[in-house]
Amino acid sequence: MQDTYRHRGLRQKLVQILKSKGIRDVNVLQAIGTIPRHFFLDRAFDTWAYKDLAFPIDAGQTISQPYTVAFQTQLLKINRGDKVLEIGTGSGYQASVLYKMGAKVYTIERQKRLFDKTSEVLPRMGLGGVRTLFGDGFVGAPRFAPYDKILITAAAPFFPQALFDQLKVGGYMVIPVGEGDIQKMKRITKVSPTQKREELFGTFSFVPMLAGTNAA
Ligand code: SAH
Image (cartoon, rainbow, N blue to C red; front, side, top):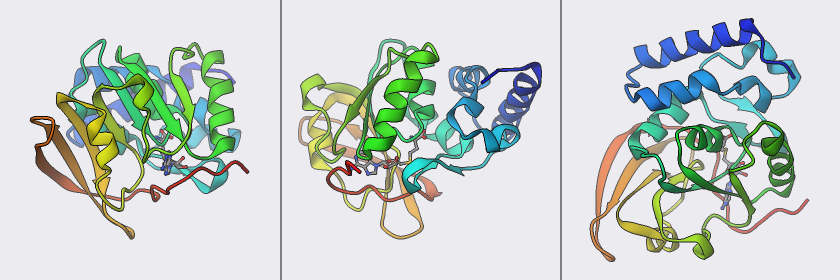
């Protein structure tokens, strides 16, 4: 795969679109302006990769719409060196955005096929620093806890307490909550080991967060 002038031009246009939709975090915009999103999609989507749209990837899953990636990342207020746990690696694009912003990224995927793919592809793209994990995001990754930030990129049917326990006090969790087609975007602040503050940021649409793993 090549990253041509044309791709770069389209990417800058995408950045402009995201700005016009209200994304302000310059580090988010810069990361999206740098990462070749077309590398994360099948070749057939090459010229489509820089539209502000979600697309199908393997295993019946989707790569999130760039606006959704930008919006969730902006809510996390990423600082360089933040330890971030992502639930739902999918294509690996969101994890790469966080990594480009200087975060230490751990990302969990329950679909073995997607895990195998990102584990192979990310290092080849110079993104081998992203730690890919195969497992159930409801369990999280206590081995590497606590995290400064936790990002859930699938629709959570309920609030995952195990993940809250793996978050630092003062840390944020960004999570789309709700079953069915529409979820409420929430930012949870961990105010103390047992208390949380909740903020609401409109509605989005995600594939469901499912329990267990799928090794097929
Ligand atoms: N962040 C991804 C898009 C995520 S789509 C990207 O940038 O491309 C949601 C992903 O979450 C899917 O790949 C799905 O398989 C995964 N997923 C759903 N439930 C999960 C769980 N319990 N643990 C880990 N991953 C999960």
